[in-house]
Image (tube, rainbow, N blue to C red; front, side, top):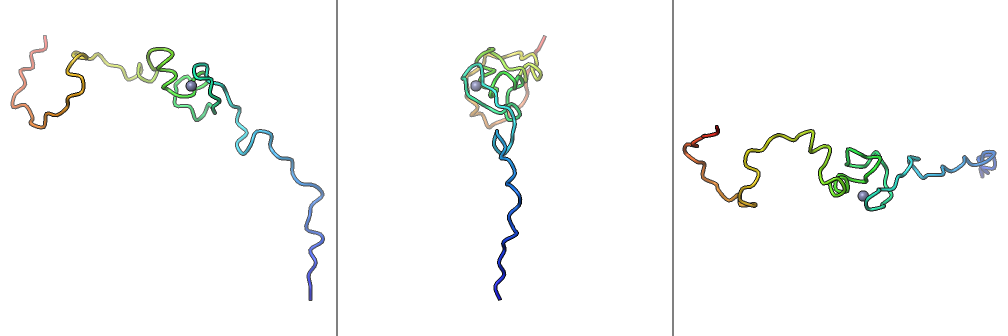
Length: 96
Ligand SMILES: [Zn+2]
């Protein structure tokens, strides 16, 4: 016995989405001119920049960085020398 599936096809196939699987609008980064999806941007200004790097590069700072910004007493220290495993016995702590 042979089952002929003749009635399987519907009237017409559903229309394909115009913008792909996720039909989210893509924006163009004003800095690097890359097209990106705003919801995937790591920038706080995700409608403007594709990532926080572009935000940082364009503004000179990042909005997210400002939110967490706190006064740093000694911002200018040794560049990146963190090779100091031994804890200091007693810090003078002469701030002010
Ligand atoms: Zn960008």
